[in-house]
Amino acid sequence: MSNTLEQIRALVATGVVRISDHGYDELAADEILVRDVVAGLATAELVEDYPDYPKGPCVLVLAQDRNGAPIHAVWGLPKGETSPAVLVTAYRPLAARWTPDFKRRRK
Image (cartoon, rainbow, N blue to C red; front, side, top):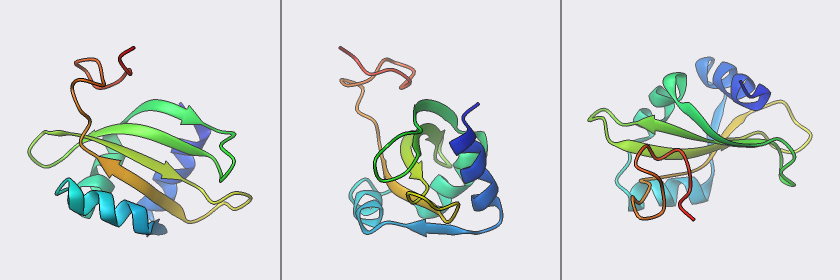
């Protein structure tokens, strides 16, 4: 389990969340509801962990919306901070770019 993901889940569970401007744009573009991404985090699967990302540690997770459709979400923490949990972006993964389980990038 990723320490970053554990921290983010704890923050989200207590409502300490921010959504980036880019995140809002991507949510709207793919018709994803914020509540689906937030609710899906509790059971989301870790796809990639970026503990040393220059803007702060972050993770890519695979979740599902209320209809069971896959969603990729990037959650992070601001560099040098312990809160808030930031939803950086969320999108519908394209089958052509991901393996059928949406957990690994195609080469």
